[in-house]
Length: 299
Image (cartoon, rainbow, N blue to C red; front, side, top):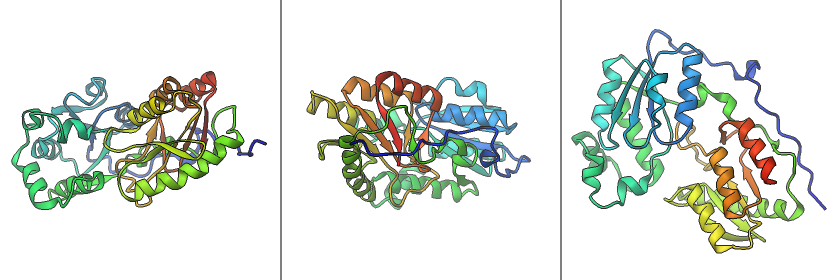
């Protein structure tokens, strides 16, 4: 018997629930942009709201669309923290947001990483004086502290785009089957524990057995690994926020690419945490999931 799930409430840009909060329009907003579509969506929304945007894009990661969406745009290597801060100071930025992924495998564990990251004294000082470990939260909080020491405050990008958070319920036409619902329940406990340890945000489950746990490689590669380990397919992905999630950064995010990866790997269901997970291009994402017969539920 299929477990009943309510239909999810879809975003409505006309709703006052999604109205942008008060922002100081006398000063530009800073955007520190990593890889993926999230920074592009955020920059486009800022332009729509008439906000002056100063964007610092991480070279070789951030989208080439960003320069056309910002009043001022700079490319910086990932290790040039001092340069990033100076770009914001030059234009009087006092509040900034972070969006997009930084692949830690490319930054911390590749060969000749010093030549790739080209670190400046500011980030070297941060790594050797501030950091006790190299977990995501440790690194990101240290970066936030470095900006704050120059009077630049980190805010949540969701203050600009609150409509990206999905309400509870089933997003797709097909609800989870009874077996999928059991895997979601089981995977939820596992994913929350991995989040508590700041290891990753996602797990892949089949028949209440964990196939893959996301770590440094990211969600998409964890899904691909699950498909390799479970060639018969039919597995469920559970993606949640950390119990201690700081909504200013590293908020779990899904979109069209996530659905495509699940389909290629042989997965059949995706569960996310309602109101704490970003859904990019929700109409296209849900339509693609419906086309592939993949259920998406916000729990």
